[in-house]
Amino acid sequence: MINFTYSQLFTQIPSAPLNIIKEKLGNWDIREKNMAKKIVSLIPNQCPFAKDIYLFNKKLFTIPPLCKFNPLYEDLMMLRFRALSFLSEIGEDITPYCQ
Image 1 (cartoon, rainbow, N blue to C red):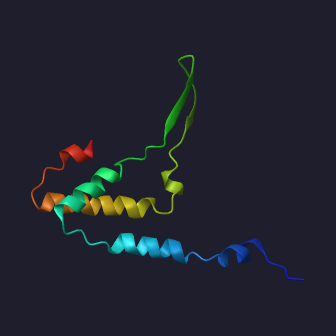
Image 2: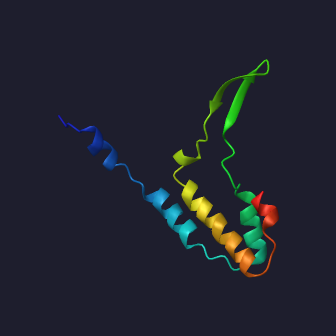
Image 3: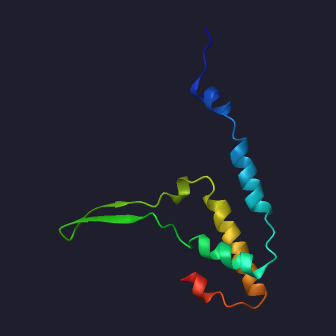
């Protein structure tokens, strides 16, 4: 009979695919204006999942933003920031992307 504790069970789950994706996002070198614009337009500047639930014009509850639970959230935000930085370095107006 094999006995596993809770922590031993979850330390053996492979996280390699997630780490590979995180590494690719972190090492992505942005060198083209069109690619930077596409990245900035595809990744929203704030978490879009927060939602207020109303019934007959009365707020019942709020669903909090769940982006912090996404394991790639910070990596995607850093990729968007690097794309915005690249656009500002080449003299592009980035104010439309910051609203």
